[in-house]
Length: 170
Image (cartoon, rainbow, N blue to C red):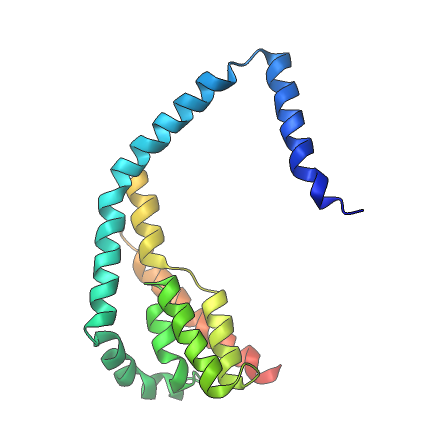
């Protein structure tokens, strides 16, 4: 007997019971939430669309590969393998692109290699910063991001450095 198979039905039954006891008009609340959600999608969509267009232009133009080649040597001095440089560059921009690069590294170096482990930890421990900033800050109507993106990018680089150091010792 698996407890997890009963969690969702129990939660739904509990929700129905609480709504009946508190005399909440569930359908009206659902419609209000759906309306608010649709308005949020309409507000946020231009920001998300622009981020996706910029990401695709960045990858398709070859700029990603060029910048990665430039950064490979300096990053190798601080302990980050040059093979994962493009992942570090792409992680803040595109989760799908990162997974595609990660798959290529697995195919080329093997999943248990040092490079593959570094790439996997970097990809799994990072976030698509520009997408998140576009969604959350546009939803909150924040126009000036101040230090949010530079600090996030620095933390991504620091996380990559720590990931490679940990993978070296494990």
